[in-house]
Picture (cartoon, rainbow, N blue to C red):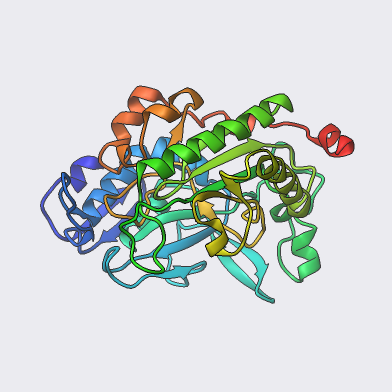
Length: 344
C-alpha cells in the first residue's frame, strides 16, 4: 500500500483489501512549510495513516467520530462533520440520538475508513470517550442509542472508558497579539508537566494507573481507564474533585476558572471534557497545527525530556517503532472505582 502512495501521481485509485478508494489532490499542501520542515501534503497524511494504522485503529475502534475537515489545509477554512451520506460502504455507521434527533455517526473500524478520512482531509481524529461495543465490561447498559434523550442516557455511550484530565496552559510567551491564545513556549509546557506530575501523585495515592499524551500545541491529556459502571456525570465529578485538590494545593499554578482572563499565567484544569457531547483527539492523531504535530503517548518518566514539537507525522512512526505502542493495553488496565466513589 505504501508503494502505491509513494508514486508521484496526483490522483490514484488505492486498493485496500477488496475495496478501492479514489484519492485526489495528493500534492495539496495541508501543513505549510515551517522552519526546519518542508510543507506537508495530503499524500504525507495518507502515508502516516497507512504506516501507523496498527496502533491508531485500536484507539478509534467503536468510538463515534467527529471529523475536522480542512479541504485547503490548516490555513484554509475548516468545518466539523459527524455524518456523511456520501461515505463509502466500508465506512461503518451507528445511529445515535443527538441534537434532538437520530443521526448516523461514523466509526473508524478498518483501514479503508482511516485512509478515506485522509482523502477528505480530516486532519484531526476526534473520538468519544465511550464505545458502542459492550465487550467486555458494558453488558449492564443498553445498546439502544436512538429514539430519545432517555435512551441515549441509558446507553453505553453515556458510560465512558476513562476519566480524562485535560491540562491546558494559559502561560504566554509575550509574542502573542491582543486576544490571541498562548503560543507554544517552553515555560508553558514545563509548567504543565509539573502540574501533570502533581496529578499523578494524587492518582498514585489512590492506586489509579494513568496514561499521558500530548494534546495539541502544548497541553497534556491524562487518562485513567475505568470499568463502565458510572456515567459521565459521575466521571466528571471525580475529575472536578481531583482538580479542586490541585487548585487548593497549588493556587499559583493551577486554575479551574472559566474566565480566560483569570487563567492567565496558570494551567487550566478542564474537567468538563468528560461529557457525552465532547470529543477529543485520539492518541496518535495528527493535529491541525503548524508542523503537523501528533497527539503522542508518553512515558511518565520522559515528560521532562521531550517537547510537543518532537512528534509530527514525519517523526512519529520512528518514535512508535522505538518506544512501542505505549497505549496498547490501556483498556486492560481498567479500575473498579466503586470503592473510591463510596469513600468520597
